[in-house]
Length: 162
Image 1 (spheres, rainbow, N blue to C red):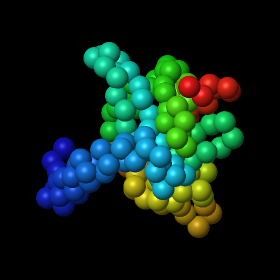
Image 2: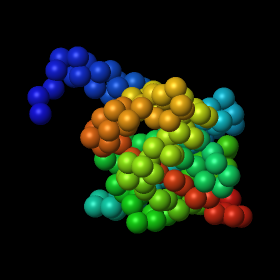
Image 3: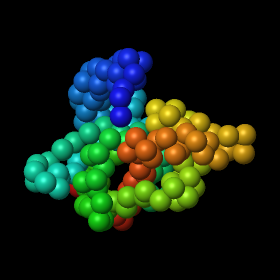
Image 4: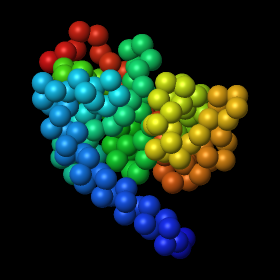
């Protein structure tokens, strides 16, 4: 598949933003100043399935009870398949959780409806807009899936603040 100059510029802009934003977000979310970001961002720490290395990345979330909904792209989320155990930095606290990866289009559509209602920016970041009925645009969702998008449900463990 050949990339267009526009797509390449968009990818390079995204990489630049990540290179600046991720380290800054990590620092703030680990600090006493985390409150300026904690309502929409968390840090997730997981183990690479091939390398065995530990990785930490900031990511936007939507809370639904004791479950956090993450709209994810790229391939890093594949490390979270199979009920992976992760650590979160959520509202300044370190929390233990278990993941559930959702890749089924219909199930993703249901989760994206919640995400788009509570945090439309997260949907826009993934290139998914809500239709007039509040449901994700089916073409946007299809394209996002083709680009490697998935949804991760992060199930918080009760009394697991560390």
